[in-house]
Length: 295
Image (cartoon, rainbow, N blue to C red; front, side, top):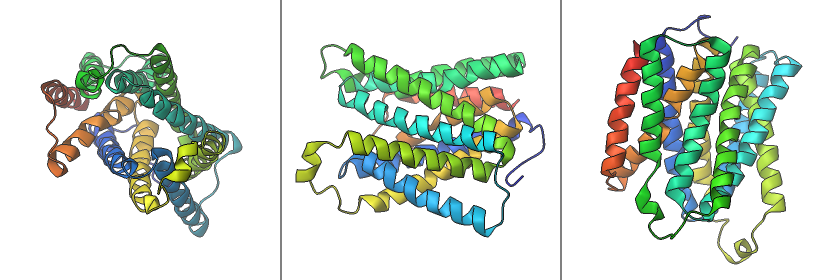
């Protein structure tokens, strides 16, 4: 299959592909964040999904790549669909306040759900890898949870945490479905996921179109940054899916889920936004996690 590696990849190879995913996903979030300052984030994401879907379809059809088995195609499409719905719910939870705590909870569950599934389906890894997984979970919490984002709120709305938890489980299930669907070929799996994602985002935009958008210049150039974010997200999907297909799911999920650290690094380099001490500690813990998982 295209983009397939040896049946069992070495831990170092899986970690390397996971870091590719984390880097490009972090870049995608950074680009999307910049775009969301001018236009609604869902419009930016939807435009990136649509353009990359056209590109993926063109590659698959022009290259004569055999289409995935129906089961794997549907698994990938379901992952894209429920992942896009989880994204809409995540943005809704952030809009309700307590962004730091909500984002941290979502990020934690995004990694934890596939890790638990991987431990159940593939058994426990070596002791060093278990230590690396635990450090990775801690790093994700330290990096994603920024208490200073919550200082303007007196309390965390319970509904925001519920929405954040549901979206985190949704993102985690998406990672599992990417792993399950990759047996039919990575490119068709990602194409099917994009089809589901475009349909899901279309439904979200259709049924929850905010009225205030009609009075804002939301159509000005949002698609340009959307294409950049979508392209980076697609590269990240390839890296994660190949890593998960050819190696352990829990390892690929943890390393790939460190992407908030790369978003913070880009913001520090390009926007001069200094990370907090907590986030700096989280990135150091993440580095230790990567080292242990590579052994």
